[in-house]
Length: 210
Image 1 (cartoon, helix red, strand yellow):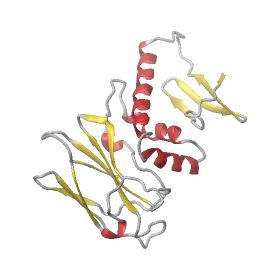
Image 2 (tube, rainbow, N blue to C red):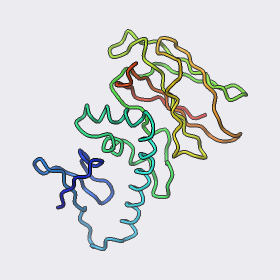
Image 3 (cartoon, rainbow, N blue to C red):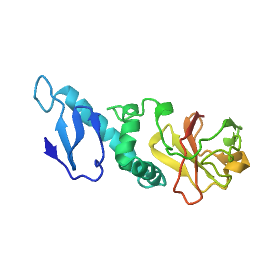
């Protein structure tokens, strides 16, 4: 058993690869999962370390955007931190080879705000995206003035999220438009969610591939 004081790991529980995070009294601790052989550099352990490094690399990109606050806010509600929560939700979607295995399972927006309702999308020949949805602002935790947030991951730079957090569209508008910035043939992965006016409360995201 080893104690740790790394703020990024605070609140993390469970097993990631061959590393187990747990709490002993009021102290966060870390230990290795027992293996038949105790060689610290086996191919499997190298793979697990590479996997963790890839997930961490993606999370570091979020810290430069509004998404840091998204995960911090929900982590605080769950009595953990944003990094620990992100890893719990998304570790499995990354590969040790440095890729995202399944964009549809990657969670970008998270929170207790009312989710997007019945959102659909279309795209014109000029790469202009139109989103439409139902205004559900009469539902609990949904306000007409909630802001639409869109995050784009382009296929050729999927570890560089483009966060469109200044779009002028609200939940009550039921429609939004924006343009993609990509070359022909490049896939775009779109994550849409709502934020309160003060950017303190967020919904889970809705995913599209374009």
